[in-house]
Figure 1 (cartoon, rainbow, N blue to C red):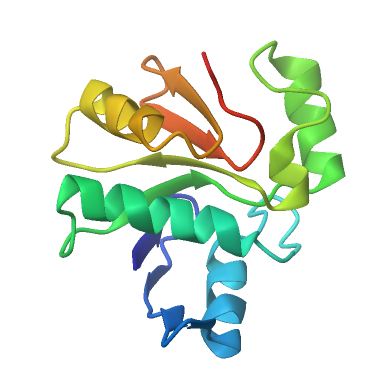
Figure 2: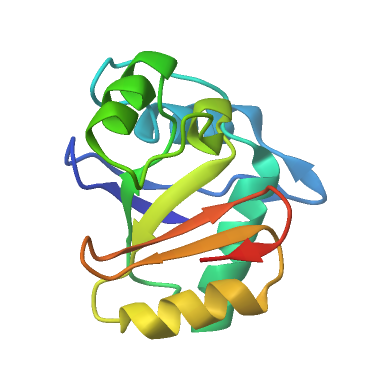
Length: 144
């Protein structure tokens, strides 16, 4: 998996799953890159979310490009501030549980990314064309 955090500029290339098991050191590295850039707080990212993102990469044939992270983990403090300033931020966002990610893939049409994410039927998928990202989470299957 190749990740780029658009807020911190950090890049990560990692194998987080091998021989049927998650790799703890790789998960820690991913947790750090997906931390709340506003508070610098790190939380465990749901491994199922990582598998879902990996399936999306496979579906798109994206082996060589970095997936841009707009938002990964979000602390309750950050989420409350964002929620107060935007009706597009859920009060009880799954980002606070490490179960959601907002992404874009440069060079890929955002609508195509959205359709590919929905086709996985792995959780919630939101489409935010004005902000240029797709939201994915490991909650119940739903689309907006």
